[in-house]
Image (cartoon, rainbow, N blue to C red; front, side, top):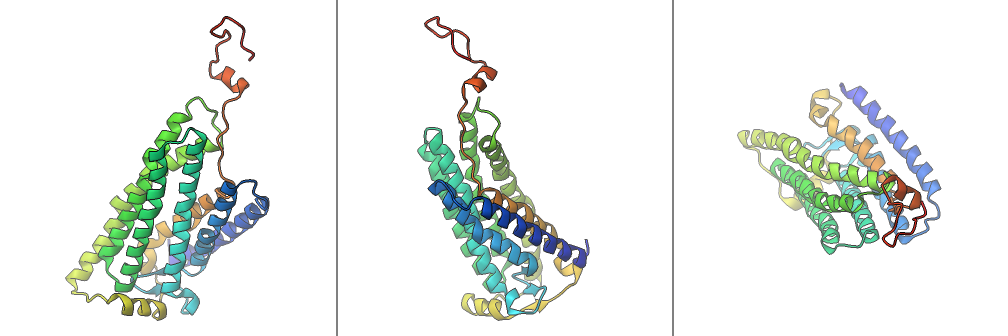
Length: 287
C-alpha cells in the first residue's frame, strides 16, 4: 500500500468512527446505571485519540509526521495516546468486574482486571520514556508490557465463560469470547511481531552508534521537532498496526458504550438446555 492510499484510508476510518461515535453517544444519552455511565464516558478519550491520530499520524521516535503543524506534535500525539489507551483498557476492566459481580463475584478475577490497568499505566510510562529518548529498546519493552497487561484478562475471561455455561449466546457471552481471544492474540502479536520490529530498529541504531537523548530535553524535542514525510518507505512497517488500531480498537470502545449485561437463562431457555420435566419431588416442571 502506498502512502496516499494509506492516508486516505485513515481519513475514511476517522469519518466512520466519528459518525459511529455520534450515533452511539446519542443512543446512550441517559444511562440507567453507573456502570453504563462510566463505560460511555471512558470511550471519549480513546475515540477522540483515534480520530485525531488518524488525521495527524506520527512516528514518535523518528519524529515523522504527515503535517508540519503544532497539531501534529509528537508530544501531543503521545499524550493523547496515554489518556486514550488507559481509558480503553479501563473499559475492558470495568466490563470484566461488572460481569463477574453478576456471576457470583470472584476476588481473583477482579484483581486481574485492576492489575491489567495498573500494568498498562506502567507501559505508558515506558512509552513517554522511549518517545523522549528515541530509544527503540524501550519501545519494545513498552509493547511487551502492554501485552502482558492484557494477558491478565485471559484467565479472568476464561472464568467468566465457564460460569456462563448453559447461558444463551447473547451480547455478554459473545463479548467474553471476543475479549478472551483478544487477551491471547494481542500479547502474542506484541511479543512475536511488534517488539521484533522495534528490536530490529534498536540493533540498527546500535550498529550506527546512535546517541540517545536525555529524558527532559527529549520531551522538549518531541514537542517542537517534526520531520514531515509522505514517503511510503518511512511509514510502511507501521501502516498495518495503525489501520487496525484506529479502526477495530476504536470501534470496540464505541461498542462498549452500550456495555454487556448478563442475562440469566429463563424458563424457555432452560427447556432448550435440557431442564427436566419432573422435579425431585415428582411434580411436573412448568416449561
